[in-house]
Image (cartoon, rainbow, N blue to C red; front, side, top):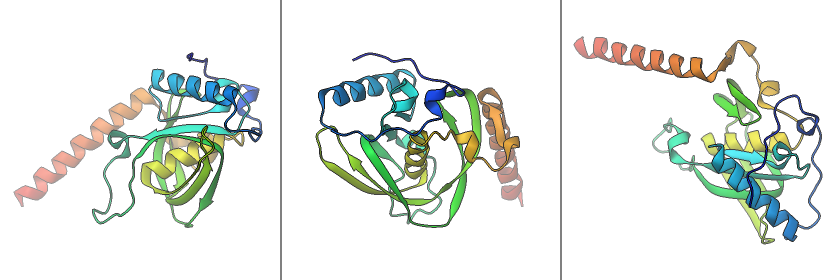
Length: 196
């Protein structure tokens, strides 16, 4: 296993259409996946696509840990917004709703920035594991967002291309300041509401 260099926005490898993997169980595929996992963990990412490590293949890895999933809007939500570390080779996504929701995204290939990106809220995805098994899951919330984000890389799309308002593309340092200000405003509003 090795930590690989991550391609940054503007590099041609991020603009192309990745090739299907002929044999998901091939030793070189397993070696690439192991490197991708090590690279993603080292970079503290939620996902990584093979083109991001200069490999033009249809392979993505992702995880949707609970601490990144945020709060569920509806406590009765039956879908899990989290996902374990998952490897998908030759993935396919089926959009199950026309409903979209904006959410803040970052990308290891677009370091230092965050953008508000509209994504489908309900999807089904499928793909093959390096062991040759088929994975098929339904996903919502952060889980659905991260799958769509990573699979976009396989078609040469970075999240800024999905944004509908570039004024919502900001530096991470400003995102932290904005979040702190929002939390402060929410707390002040709650105190005012409680005082009534």
